[in-house]
Image (cartoon, rainbow, N blue to C red; front, side):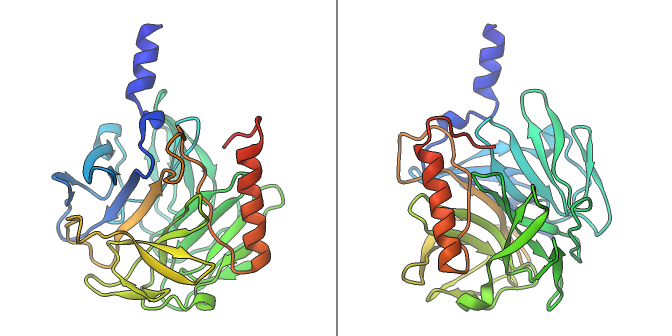
Length: 316
């Protein structure tokens, strides 16, 4: 019994993640290693960045768990569930598969990994659900809503469309997937908000803070910049957007914090953020994204509020 308790404390101690902690992964090509806070890591690793102390530590090392066969993009989607399970999407050649913890999957899938049993299961099967996305990435950003719906963005070549549930969308858009009806709807259309200058990878990281601000990272050529909400930023940054004022600010400045590596057009290509507004929270709330219409915004706010108020509420 004591050993079991010790293992639960050692493996993914979600309750000890500080508010504002960022879990992130990067994509690099010519040099396989990136660095942050004195820690070197590959594109298949996940780093934990403590924004209160500006320090980094290894959260998940792919080689320790035999996660192999993924491309230069490595891990390109991250989420933590309240039960301590880790959701992942990865980048590999179109149609190619990777096997991890007993599950074989593609870049269009999201898998759920149990760190205690070190077994994985399919969380979102892109092929079975009709997700069509060109290129080697498939799903490259996702978040889980309190009602079990899935927000996701995909990566495909310029001007090519992905499709899901009868909906066509670009790599810079975010759609909501309802698993009960197998239908998709547009939640965030980049062109509606003048998000410009990003590459084929489009949006490659999304999250929502408890104050309703949207966090995102994007893909553009190494050293090149994008503009959104009056802010100019790079692929190594995470920006915070206030939808009420349509203005953006820097949430995580990669260069200022010493994030280094040969990133190509990606930089940060996956992240998950624990809440910052309430330091008493002991587990991360599900990440959600803003919609493109006032109605969609109101619905998401209502969902989040209901989950927080209900004594029986739980995250998937």
